[in-house]
Length: 428
Image (cartoon, rainbow, N blue to C red):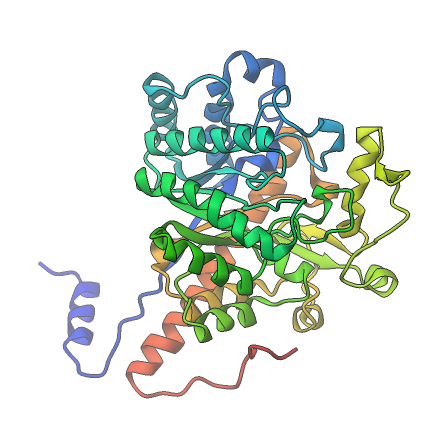
């Protein structure tokens, strides 16, 4: 016996020119780097997979549906001293020892226990490092990340491209062709996609370079994809879009997505980080969007400062003019949205649906946390903060999904126009 609801749906479906209201929503997750010290170092070093188990339990308590599992070289193996880093090392997935079937089964059992999925495995490092020995170590680790991703049943890894500091940008494209494309082939051989996050990483070097990850902007995404396509691995190269980095460079999401569509690349974005950026107008007035170029204290006598902690001041290039936003923690500021000084979250999610080629219900939306005052390394204090941000991200995506379904499907099917003009690409 059909229910009343079913009968109504059948009647509507059989009426010409009527489209059901059927909004689609993204998969909501959280990057485990949001709390590096969830499992204390002395415990997780001795029992590495304990950190993953505890993060899965924490994700359930946060109200997330998925985690993005953060991997990194262990502090004892990294080429950059901990003191020189802006953030603690986020190696939730510890790969010093092989990730074998026993370890994978332990993680998969915890995923089932807590009913939390896995979006991908993320390793953010410089894959084009100018030192061949350091580069090899990073590439070898990325291969281990890929192998772990396969064993955990996901279809993607996430990371950076990086930059060879000994070469100019055009030469870096050649370096990408010669030395990064093999990573894309390795991903393809494993049935994986390599999704590149676009952070320019200005603090990666104490030198004056601002763009230290060459996959930082749509013009370069398309250039890199063309190189990958020529090598037969274009399908293994995608972008993991993070709007905070667009704001950092004076861009806005809608214009970026429109550029991709205009250029024939609306398929290029394969996943999302949900992290914002709030521009400090005073910092921009002092230094511009190129960041603070001198007097940071990260260099001495033409060389990086001998004290690694002082080298971390290279990040002043960025922090002098901007501060990361944990979604929902910045004030609602329509003028800032229009001036590209803060992320317009609703339009971000709406533009993704209007301009990109996405299967929305299969697309991951991952909350990333780098808001300095809230970088609390205490699980109990951080829990309500992250829980609220994840709930905000989910609500925004649901609102955007409902708007899109109503305007572009329901109204469109009946020839009813959408009201107003709305935000326009290439215009602030």
